[in-house]
Amino acid sequence: MLTQDPPTQPSSDPHAARKGARPLDDTVCWFEGRWTPLADAKVSIMTHSFLYGTAVFEGIRAYWNSDDEQLYLLKAQNERKAGQLDAAIASLRKGLELDPKAPGANLLLAQMNVDTGKLDEAIAAVKADVAADPTNKERNANFLLGLGSNAYKAGVASKKPEDFQKAIKLLQGSDEINPSANAKFFLAVSAYQALAPSLQQGKSWKCADARSAEALLTLVSANMPGGGSVSPEAAGQIMSAVPQAQQYIDAQSKRLCK
Image 1 (cartoon, rainbow, N blue to C red):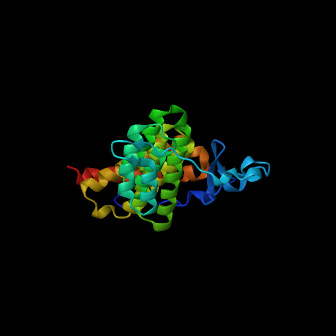
Image 2 (cartoon, helix red, strand yellow; image 1 turned 90 degrees about the horizontal axis):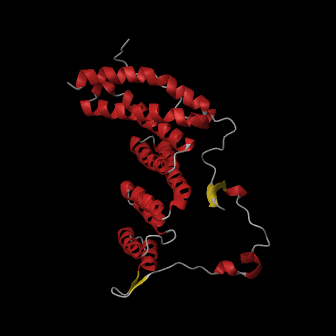
Image 3 (tube, one colour; image 1 turned 60 degrees about the horizontal axis):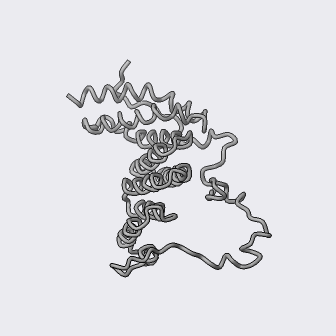
């Protein structure tokens, strides 16, 4: 039976049900080819850098351009430190024209695009890195997964739908590069979190709002089955709310979208 009242919502915090799972607020780092809890990222006291002090040396290809007389990657690093992100992005792009496989350059470009709110360009940079070296696929998917998880946590703190929308875009990029249960789970949860406040305002919707709600609910339905293993209880709570939300959105769409 269709109802004009907004559906009730299950708990909006999926982490309460994640029995035995690592809390989202634990710090992780990229260590020896995989994402690792920071507490477990340890090196031996016999490591060369400790014994002989080689950790004080750092090297990065800077790519001298004789026409412009510039070291573009070094220039980009200096511009970034000075807070000149747009200039740093332009310098990185010129450096990547010289060597599309420059180690770390595309991921640095992606991070700076995220910092300046250019999510589509950030995802494109990560995909370009995979295209240049397919062995980076898992690493780069995890890079976007980490950015998406941070955006999700920002949304939980701010309660702003735009933060969840940011998470959705980054997590979709991660799942497109290398599908994973984690990306699908947090993509579905982010979509649900973005949708839930909107459902409470359904009586003031316009047709575009109903269409947007429908798209978010589709993301939940499409991704939670593949990501539910991350937190079965939270997935069950959210999926149990989908039929009622679908009825409500369908009713509003029929009323508003003639």
